[in-house]
Image (tube, rainbow, N blue to C red; front, top):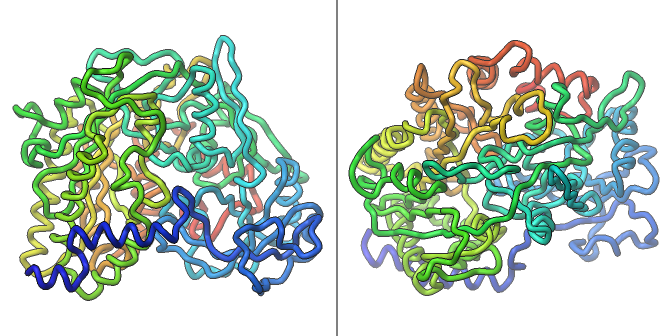
Amino acid sequence: MSASHDEQAGLSRRGFIAAGAGALAATAIGAWTPVYAVPVRTQGSASGSAAFSGSASGSAASLPTPPEFPEGIDLAQQAYQNWSKEIILDKTLIAFPNSADDVVRLTNWAHAKGYTLRPRGAMHGWTPLTVVNGAPVDKVILVDTIKHLGGVVVNQGAVNTVTAGPGATLSEITDALQAKGLGFANLPAPGVLTIAGCLAVDAHGAALPADGQATLPGHTYGSLSNLVTSLTVVAWNGTEYALRTYDRSDAAINPLLTNLGRTFITSVTLQAGPAFRMRCESFTDITWQEMFGPKGAEGRTFESYVAKNGGVEAIWYPFTEKPWLKVWSVAPEKPATSKEVSGPYNYPFSDNLPEGVADLVGKMNAGLPGIAPQFGKIMYNTTVSGLKSDNASDLWGWAPDLQYYIKATTLRLTEGGGAVVTNRANIGQVIHDFATWYNERIQHYKGQGKFPLNGPVEIRCCGMDRIQDLQVPTAGAPTISAMRIRDDHPDWDTAIWLNVLGVPGTKGMFAFYREMEQWMRGHYAGDTAVFRPEWSKGWAFGPEKPYTDGPIISTDLPNSYRDGLPNSDNWDTARAAFNQLDPHRVYSNTFMDQLLP
């Protein structure tokens, strides 16, 4: 595009930064909540507004108070929107239970009155596992876990653990662990996530051990779900809903470790290992052709950095030549060239781009799809200059401070992709094949004047859910975790996450995601790999929307948790377990009824 078009679109580098700064002035840094919390009934407050700092002045609830709603539980009406703002409800009812016993009372009330309940945490997700666009909400109540159902207790002993309420955030948990010299090895990038939300979708990070590096006792490089030693859920006992606790030695816990929100966790205990320091180096001078070279290629390849250092992530901005490569490695002592950090979110140039920037890009993109190459260059140049100005190219500190890097003000995009489960030796070839395919397709569409994708490609790796990493007796791995090891391929020890991001509303985006998903399912199959969805992101793409491909939902996806797994612990037994715990489907919605009938 010409310079005049760039200036008209407002996407010069100066304009890009200015737009972000202007929007930040009106945004609470590091915090994001849906707007307009309107009390419906608040206990202990005559006006009913004191408990809700986000209340809209002068607003009145338009949804009626449900009949005989349990006493002592606050209720509000509030808008709902997911991370990418592709699922938006103007008004929903939100309950604020004070304890696990309140959740039980609320569940039994919902069963008696014909309501459904959906747990609500940080809302950092893309899927309709919580609420469904267009579905009736008159008998749906979201149950907030953050306001009252947090709390963290560290338990030190022969096996070090941490017990948390469902609404405790990862940051709160790792802060408490850090104070006792403990932590987790593999963390998702947003510290705001609630622990129950993490377990619902087998949350993970981008951590792997380097070649020859041992896993420290207490740690795992798979999902957080694999660290659970016990949990308590609300379960039907034949007469009513009540609390039930499961230990990791009980096979009945396996489906609950990754549960897609089909149950309600009220408490969870997770194993922890010793805290450790890491180094994170950033590189922006390697071409994608070199970085994503095939298996065994010479040069500075993704594969070679994994072998030498361990954790690696590539962020490849659209229509640019050199991705942003992050490389994490265990470093007990501070390297001479590293900058020591004492807190998380150390990339201000990316962390503090508020949602208003995505909104602006979306509006421009609707009329100027050809802006995608220019936008990619702006994001790359902003990264290069930001790393330099913030002295953030070589960081050293405690592991959580280097692994948390996505805030509520990070640019909000939608995502498609998933996990390729394979042997570690195949990392280079898997990534090379994908990068080659992806580049050919976007160049093909660019030649037709089409730009269906305008966000970066994100490539990460992590380990699998090894039960050997547990220091307590265990009956198995999380049943439907993407990081579940197949019995017929114990050598498949690595999950490679391939995701592509785009601005919500981009024309042709979901059709491209569908093409990509179909290619991935066909290419990563057979005796070398299997493709599985990333539960929190986009999958089952139809031509116009995600989560609409019937054959994937009913057959292909379930088969990825049947193939190579025992009949006693697979997709079908997980579905049966959810239905046994909640036979009245209080914890469900219209999409879940299709996915897990």
